[in-house]
Length: 218
Image 1: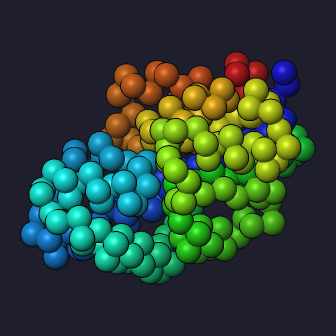
Image 2: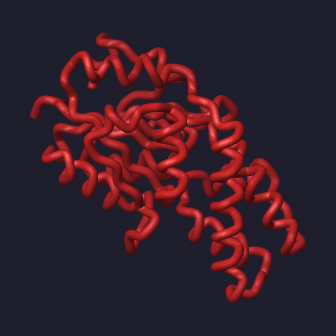
């Protein structure tokens, strides 16, 4: 079936927010007397905020009664940071124009909650180009479960086999493939040689590198 729909992840793909998430989490986790290394943080990239906090609270034996306050604090912290300092990833305008010129339906499928989605979409000025925005924040399962991608395809009135997804995280890549969609992965530079990303249909170093020749390989 011919591809006619593109669905983008958000954090780390369209907006350079992963360092800001790291900062926000570090500041809040210090209240509970622990700090994650870069390597530890990388293992939970792509998780929803609640799952991310639950995971590390279990590892550091923090009472789960603190979960709601920590989740709210980290989300508000990262919203503030992205609003003040968030920048588009290289190639965002290029990739949107590429698919707009080809009359693709365009959607967003992210693990982030609506307050952050609104800040990012408006900061990047892309709201008018998105025909569907879906969040996994309140779904029973987040990425790597495929539900958020399936929901986005349904909202766009597209079949999964008609969709190409762009992701930066392994959890997101698995979610897209589990949804039976094509997946282009754009991993962070420090992790780009990790063999786990070979599960994608295509790996590129930047959105700006995507072109019609690569499109034909999918």
